[in-house]
Length: 408
Ligand SMILES: *Cc1c(COP(=O)(O)O)cnc(C)c1O
Image (cartoon, rainbow, N blue to C red; front, side, top):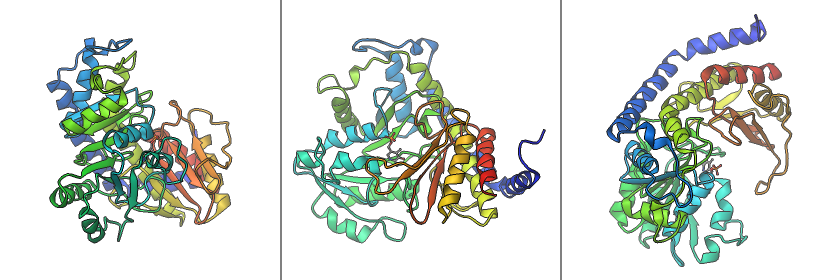
């Protein structure tokens, strides 16, 4: 049975033969990360009895405590709160920022403008519906220089000891390159050397399990409907870091005095445990899907970033179509090649917070889960699509080939 034309299948096999080494590397990293996860599960003695969640206040919920511990151990942090009570990555980042920033403190972003959903949290856009700005927090920003942190400018900024140094690891939906874990750790060491009182907060979204370690930070933040949820978590997020900072974050998530000691897990614990267990493998599937997209599209003369054999630092694949119609057709194909809502046709719409219409394809089991194959693009020059996810390489490849069929 032929599901795609011979031309498409030939492109696919030629791409896959180019990708052997790339796939080997991705699988090697997944294995290393899986070792680390397995050790944490065994050392923390995860047991079936941990899966029966709590209700009400959620006092003495052993499963919750063990899961917090596992996330801390795997991410190399002294402490963590890893909960379904975080609605999203944006919520976890909001809790992290509000937990340590106080009136007249400075928040300095060193990787340019943070992810769009943080505009209103910080108050960059000027509206004050409870933003940090409304509480008197000063926001400053340094843009990246030569794809890295501008250390000359940062050294000057650190003279006034800003309270928080904020860095985003992934490219997010921008043209910049992601930063590696080594780059993030260099930043952490530099900040501690020049301004020991400053705290480093890292937006780790889309970066988890892509490399063999996670960055060191006072607060490391991410979402469970992306990489670390392994495609199984229904919702949630995590904040990992120093004991002191994580305790402040827990006080902000619940309330001062209860902190991490409360929080009913309902029936979510097993899915979080199982999702985090799956995550190294699932991230590898997403990375292979992204590399496959890069290979077939570059073979068709379309410019992609990262390139086929570039070192991948997050799960996002940028595709520069340079053509409105092709971009939209490809995006429609991603939707058509999804397991859910494959009959829906995505249309560009004026999303709040964006200055041009945005098109999004996401036929996902979990609403908005971008560890599942999904694609987003602002409809403007240079017509760049951001593609990420894929729960299995086989289904990711199916999605990419369906989309490819729409443009050739
Ligand atoms: C997804 C993402 C966020 C926000 O997470 P949501 O779960 O969508 O709220 C923040 N930063 C980066 C880099 C992201 O990729």
